[in-house]
Image (cartoon, rainbow, N blue to C red; front, side):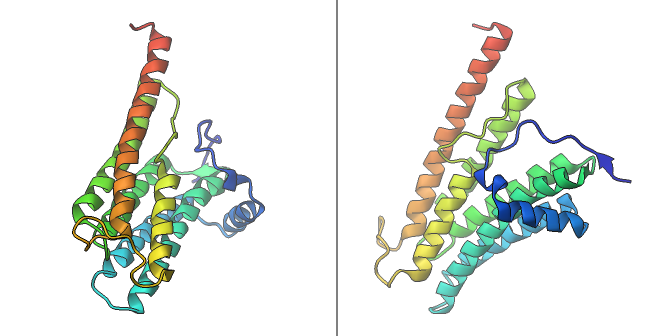
Length: 228
């Protein structure tokens, strides 16, 4: 039996939530009986497929590699669409399961790891930077969750929150899909390309994001508790 829920008070602020196309899609999925948890799992599948497609670009030749870059970008956006719609469908139907919060968070972290690690193994990428970007991305979510658990509000600030990370991945994939050969900037040995640059930006930006979220949580908690 489905359980009644209340709309979350602290949701990631997204302008796309008010778009007409988003509302129509959520209403259609709700009428079709789509499960918010199922949508979350579909988003995770899209994120994992995005990572596999990106990683495959270092093992296949053109034009297939360009097709893989393009499909990778599309699956990244499909993952974000699922992340948007699962909550909207839950609100539209007024139903969720007791484990809905787990379905909302855990698949997101798996998607982040798969997509960013996959970009590390992509053509022009760097595996170490891929795993570094994946790890720091998960750390941003951990800091947010710990701040909430301690009593601070949810903090979705950047500069490298999930939408920002996936924007950089998408732009990088589209560049590699459509830019003429040789247009990618060489980094270091010359074997590294746009993917390496993107991962470095994500890793550094994610660390900055963690520090900003930690500082805000600490400031809020000191104010609440009168700590020094």
